[in-house]
Image (cartoon, helix red, strand yellow):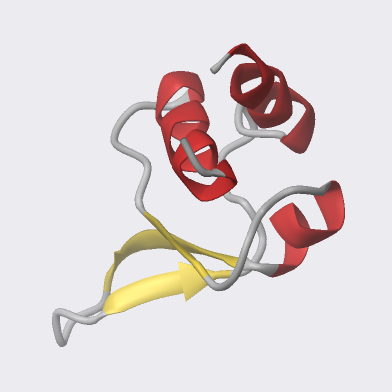
Amino acid sequence: MTNLEKFWKAVLIVKPNTQLTVRGDVTSEEEFNNNIEWNTGVDENGRAIITTTCPHSEITWTKVKAEMDKL
């Protein structure tokens, strides 16, 4: 299993149904903070509303990394 596959599985373990886009790899806290676009909803035109700041307080690099290490 690749690191990216582990990352995706780990995020969904921490918070199921999370919607995000990964731009690159996520193997460090810096990449976690810089390589992810979080989907926070849809605007009036049906386009995704995204942010680079994680909107889910339960999803932290520490929790995701712990789950990745288990996989």
